[in-house]
Image (tube, rainbow, N blue to C red):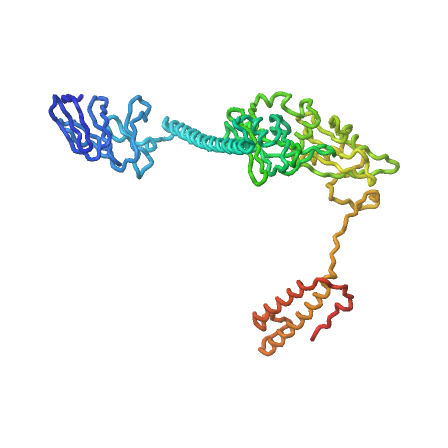
Length: 539
């Protein structure tokens, strides 16, 4: 225990002094001192921790006079913390040239680093593994925090752009008070909207929006922007659908909305975004971006929130609940790929034509959709390989006994499964191919004369090149003859070979340019007879 009498310790930029009863009992000069800390060890011995730029002095008065106990140079940072979890603070220093910290005990002696003391099979090895896991978790937390900050900045910018766009429209239309409600934004932009509808189909989450363009100009580059509040990013795609008179009464269009027309805009989000989320919940704001008259506008919608419990309900999945036919068709089209197939019915003697509705509704156990006669959907069992497959077919048989169908599936393997099921379940000889594939019988047992398998053959008109070919042959013969004469004069051995550069590179380039000039200049060429193409060869 320190027995020295001491009342006050004063630290200035250049000196540390100790006083007792207003008398100086000890001092030491240390220049550029910025901070001093009083530390005592377990024996209550007094130490002074003096920090200077890039160095630390540890002072002690063990012999009755203050002196430098330790000097640590090249200090980058230091802290007083409980590094060993013993309840006592110790000094931890990180030097500029080394990333491994220096840890001192209560007597300010350097403790041997834990990595040097590690032995297999000891508790220290377990502590190192735990420390690595904790450091990994800390790094992940820091990265997620930075991503969230970046997402928040982007969200604020989008809100600012939307507010500024609304402000410009409001000023042009003479509004005195600007209300940032969603109804006022859509009214100012002359775009009618409805609240987003969230549904599930084919393991995809659909955010369905309806937009009606009341502007005299068309809206281009229409894209849905989903700004997640609990995820750094969300993987999704934007699909635009428009109603048509032909089945299935909806079709995909480009990212453009014509004037005075209504379009269904769908954001398709993968279900894995919700499945692999830690909170099992997705919260995001919906904004539609579009371009009109070379200016970009942002149209905000109500925020959307989806939890894992929502996806478990039967009302959430369109294929499992009794939705109207438009909702079912648009959900399947938005989450599927389209394949065009052709069915050919090879009939035997006195066999009646097959009805396409019997193929899909009776034999393949698919169900029809109300208000649409020529659409079949498979949604009986979610475990069936054809679950979610939709087929659009013609209601009447074509004269050449072929049926054109459109198949909407999640993946190409479902198309192959559909073909196999037709071959096994349908009691008719039906050949399924792609729309451009032609059939040709190998044996005479089957007659394919009923099918129109002819296609327009590509015909090439070579008559336009007839005269130019004749002229090119004449130029080539003349040039090769001159090259051959030049080789004989120089004493080169020909051996049935002609050096095309025998007259020099300059003459060869002139010869080449002359050939190309003839080919490009001959436009109006009449037909040449076969005997005119016979050019006599020189010896």
